[in-house]
Image (cartoon, rainbow, N blue to C red; front, side, top):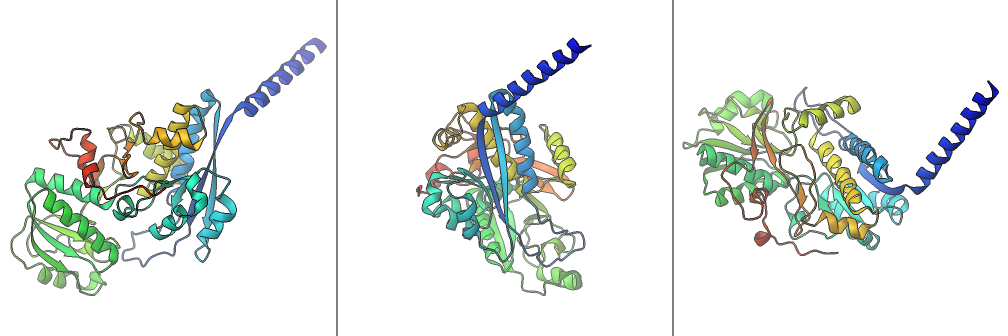
Length: 392
């Protein structure tokens, strides 16, 4: 009996010894997640629930996946979350808690804050993964060499819609424009895509009615949409102030696309192909809701770091960044084609989902659109079109 007890004590000792030795030999990759609380926007529908923690659960799920692989590669991935209050100072939090402590930062911040951080001298020795913005300019004239972008920009989304409209031969567009700066940026992308695919914008009108569209939709939309014949109504309403009320109320029976109706998106809760169902369900088990675009982007950011660290067997910035921007990098994104970063602007090339509210309609690039490198580069700004000059 005593010998058995001694045997178990010795076994436990050696077990603890090897676990401790393994932990000490682990290569640690520290990742910061930085976001700022948002003020809930005005709700125009009872079904529009405000989600205040978009992104965080996606990053946590990816860290779990990274560490599953890390058990076999002696690597440990640690995520540290920094949530700035609404009235807090993002730069201060970054300076005190992240600068000189982390090399990899997942950013869930608007463009202005992102650029402030990227331009700080200390950030030159960091890699920031932008999991929120869709601004074309951040991938062009305002690009930064220490920032990689995970979500499709507006140009990629507009091109995805344009390709599908070309396939359907819906070439005459009625463009309806909202009044916010973001709406005008989306219009720029739509016009670029229309020119690219030889579409004809037959009518262009700005929505100037009351934003309480629920009261005026039946009368205002019908009168507003009495225009020349068109194939499809393209709406630019990124804030969701009126676009939802255009469907089924236009003077002519025509489909709605753009920011409402058929939308171009990085992720959608109806997507169930290429293993997406597994990711959807795992995320829902963790977060208690379906993943949003920002969740998917943060997931990809952390997974990209994990993939690069695994392949390079390093936690150092130099080899990881070089691998991320190389032709060898390929990331599983549950959308068919492997994902990779464009070396000329830091944009993650990826398929774009075309989705209605309750169904996945198509995936772009649409079959038939070819490219000498990859069909994914038929979406957005290709290398000959870029205005990006890396600012390190």
